[in-house]
Length: 225
Image (cartoon, rainbow, N blue to C red; front, side, top):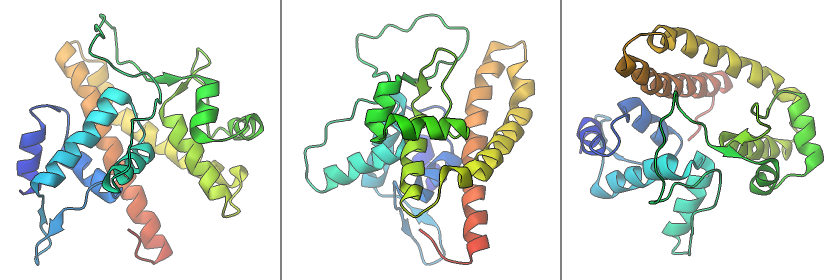
């Protein structure tokens, strides 16, 4: 299938998915479609099934991409791979309550320490540099697990948390740019337009992350996966 055909298939279950999202998942190595000699992507039925599985784990289990990749790799090796418990798990008995706005998956401090395999001292240091910050109620969003895992991985190469402040500043600026673009949609009187703001935010976030990755690759002058 072409990427457009894949989008049409996935949108039955995932109405907010976009071509940019599919490309982003490919850039993260979560799906590897075949390429024609002219460079066009061609997705197999297995690729589409894998994409659906990834999107379902994000939607229903709030899992960060690193955890999803590890889960899929384990499945491909034929290992028993139960889904890790990160954040709030959605079950069939869940009854959606009326909400004023979108909810954010939350995990406690102890859960974050366990999921990222770090100690209290490391977390306090990273918080002091603004790399990880608790929400207003003292919990953390589920993406904090991904951030913590990546900071720890970089530390193995001698990159200290203080060196990462420039990345945090760049991320804040990129987030501010996206928020500036979608702000008019968020303030709109039409509820459907306000709901569209979340989908637009996700699409723009995927594009900015892909651009950031491409710029880093270009600056390093090396070919990365």
